[in-house]
Length: 292
Image 1 (cartoon, rainbow, N blue to C red):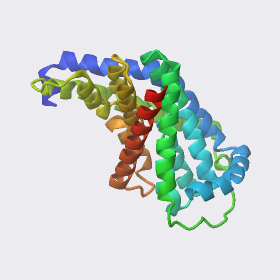
Image 2: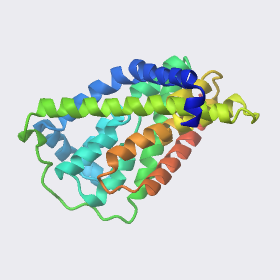
Image 3: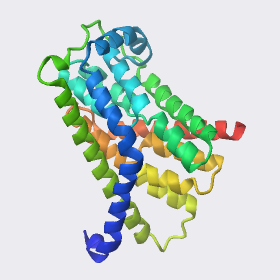
């Protein structure tokens, strides 16, 4: 508050830049997926997909078919669709309490539109780098989640998830929840974009190089950090981007934990898992980038 009052024009412009980033890079891609996944989860086709994915999801990750379907949608859509889907499935009674944590760690992923399209093709000017980033991200998330299933018994068979759309207006409910979700995401991006500039201003006396500054900004808001690191393309900077997009940064983590707050997922274990996923994704990305 003191920093904002000391330079209101400067930091108001930062918030404006964050809103612009959300409106240009996040809203056009994320909002349609939020709406479509909200509607899809209320259809009979979702029940069919859940039944089809049950054997694989249970054997590999110890989650239900409904959870496996949510993880697949999250992988296609990106943040914060996965956390929102987990929260809705839990409210509907479609997933069990014992699988919620593993499913939250599995479903909180970025998507190909951001990783390949935005970070790879636009920021690094290389779709190949984008696909390396995507592969490393998926492997980092899934391999750690496979470790979480160790010594966990298979889930018992259960009925397919209930049809949420059987009650009320499915179109209105899906549209309303999607609009609220995307506005919350935009608010978080705008605020943390300004927070990143504030931290940079407070640490002006430190001799931080561009790499350190990019990581610091990315730990608050991953998109800004990736854009900063992409100014000097290299395997190291791509690996650091893999860590940032997999860990999520404070902005994404706040959005995810807000959606997961009613599911019983504890913040500290969730953060530790995301940290491990990010570290593994960075190692894999660096190795693949050096090879390519």
